[in-house]
Length: 344
Image (cartoon, rainbow, N blue to C red):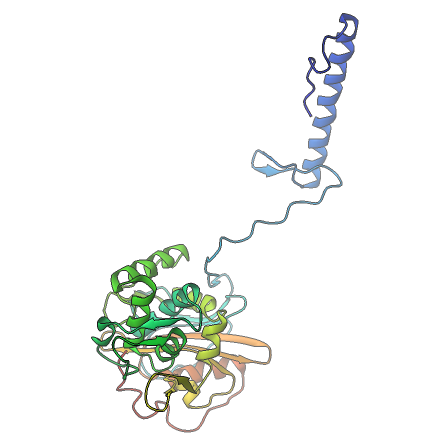
């Protein structure tokens, strides 16, 4: 604390020397305190030559929290420990730990490629941030002008719950549902795409760019590393996590019977691969077959990203089998009937 010689009114001249001596002693004590703090590596509340210092006996300040919304990046700082034999064509891929972000295996992880409907996980992220589950969304004309896969039967001009549309977008990869949600949240496709790209920049996704909410345009591009980081954020959203782990789901819908029955496009869920809890498929001619899969077993949660894959179901199983050491191979077709034909 700085001493003010004017405090308390006029002082007698004979006390000035004593005051000066007191000030010098105080400064010397403060200097000793700083030196002691430096020797202990603490924090004094300011920086000296870039190093923090702290008074003896006071706890150091808590480390700064990460900025809100920043994606937990994947960690390439360790040797890869999983070496799967991946059969068939695959342009890029990544196996990672959902909890730590550590990369366990990779192939061309930063190559920028079209990502098709993997785009929809960013759409879903923005929707759950900006809506409530029971909120109604009006079905616009724009939502009915779509191509590729769709929920279908969306009633123009009527209202459908945001949650039903979110489920339809994530499970059957409904492009119509994605457009309806984008219009509801931002008023138009273009405004929603601006939100998507702004959020990608905030999350530090350097090789990611979005051109539409549904992912059909070639301008929707990313890399395996970015998609793994985004998956770590998305799977922590309860509304998304509850949906993407379901193989089948019936949702309330304003149609005859009052329900809409949805079947997931996730090949691991269709093959009943043990521990599967998500996440999303995608396919266009430009992107090929793309997949983000998440499996939890024995207290470990691992994710895989596959871009331009010849067979996402078989390759994901090969990679997860190698990671978990199970040797498990689900029976049945690696691509359930109709999966290869799906677009969106």
